[in-house]
Amino acid sequence: MTGPRGAAEGGEVRSTVMELERVDAIIDEGPGDVRNRSIEEIRSLRAEAQTLEAGLSFVRRIVQGRLDIVGAELARRKSGGPPTDVADLVASLPDILSDRVRAPGLGRLPQILAPADMSGLMREVDEIAHVDTLTALGGQSDLELDQLATDLGDYEKSVSAKRRSLHDVIDAVQAELTRRYKTGEASVESLLQ
Picture 1 (cartoon, rainbow, N blue to C red):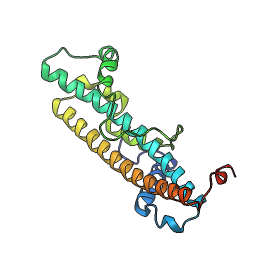
Picture 2 (cartoon, rainbow, N blue to C red):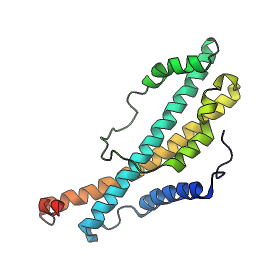
Picture 3 (tube, one colour):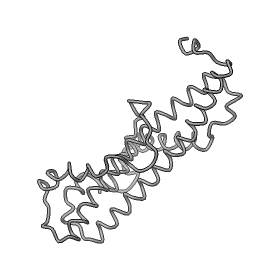
């Protein structure tokens, strides 16, 4: 573990708070009365929500990978396999991580290739299961590994819930944009302006 939450420098802590505050603000506000918003406001909200969702998606994949590594160590212990060292862990990563080729739930094609900066959330992931912790799983007790898996699982659920909520906002905004194009309230030419 890298230390207690919030132990980072002041700017780093503020970055985490800003990321989470913005995600939570969009979720809490929802799309609002989109029929009374300008098309520019709607597009801006959609773009920001998509960027934040892509960042959360990245964080979620990192958490899932770390959870898979911890799960593989727990499974190795249950099967009575030989202890692993860092070289064994690295050699087995393709097999461990290939188990989750497709995540559960509805898949979405990424709309944003450059996600929001989620470095603050990544620091939180490192506080739960730092890379150094993952390379030293053999020295952890079964109880410590179980707790690590629980903490990672809880964090993944939290991030996934926020992503689903952002999807709801994106879907509502997209539906309004589609409605405007269908009814002629907005034109494709306006995209080029």
